[in-house]
Image 1 (cartoon, rainbow, N blue to C red):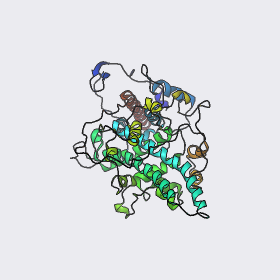
Image 2: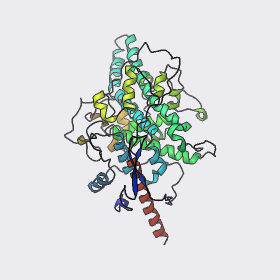
Image 3: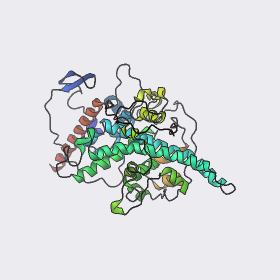
Image 4: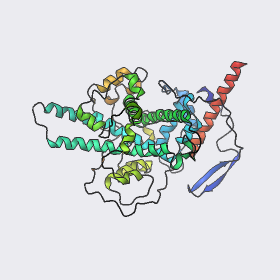
Length: 451
């Protein structure tokens, strides 16, 4: 990150003017500089292989540089809380330059991807919550079965947990499907172009997918207080690539799915798992969308279509995925450390010793799965080891129960779009400018070596 020493071509708001944006209802800066084509070194289009390591041991000088130049600046009367944008910024700052691209930075700053990341954080948070809490109860019931008869209430409890996790996976899947088909604001990132008429750029698309997925894993890990990195990475890769093509599992060889009991598999993996041949295998994320179970149609429109009189359960989900982050505490919802005071964390979003703690988390999870996952990884042991023994930084998720008297299909579906959550365009341009400067430095270094 030594390439950040020179600020380069002046400040962020030089050589331009301000206009009033009617859509955003705020003033926006418009640069008067001519559009410069980035002639930086050609980024490889080959799919990244092996582990993509982020720079986690950032020294104090680099932390000061990050805080001064790249950390999100607060606006007037804006609460000083942790936001998803803060997690994005830190992931972009610590990411290796080889995986960064303008397309990746731009894609991270659109409403669809923002909802996708929030839904993925919510899904992973609840998944880890089940691993650390519910599995203890299920293990106790399994021991009780040796001397007691299994009651129907066991199935009711397990079905409730499984349904909650299935619904949260659907939230992620609906945004993921939007990206796949190039819908809404993701048109320009489709592998066949915005009009879907050109030849498929499969290699470029595969690279963007791999880097976006790895970036999202890092963002989720930061948002969840830097705990259980390997569990997050394993589950995210399983959801988007299936067990057969889960490269992380092939590397760590934890066999965590095989070690689950039948009851744990039903809860944690869901009922939409399909076993097919390798060439026709669909990812578990896609199977959630085309599952046979009953899915509330209103869930597919959360954050996109304005819907009135939502049930309590969908209101809770809507407040997290599409609600303002500064109101998370007021709305009594939890999304990792998002919405907590930023003063509780240092520059790298590591909790300070004086940060308030919630109730202590349980040290057990899925039997020996967590310990085996931690032992298999040497490069990420600092991220996963003893994660479950750390004090909890945020409250657990308590999803309202699913109503048994859901409204029937209406005579006409709502079509009024919901105003999208605006992403921080200032941060987007800041990271694009930094990437251009880093590429310029790499190009100069390559020219110097040839000379």
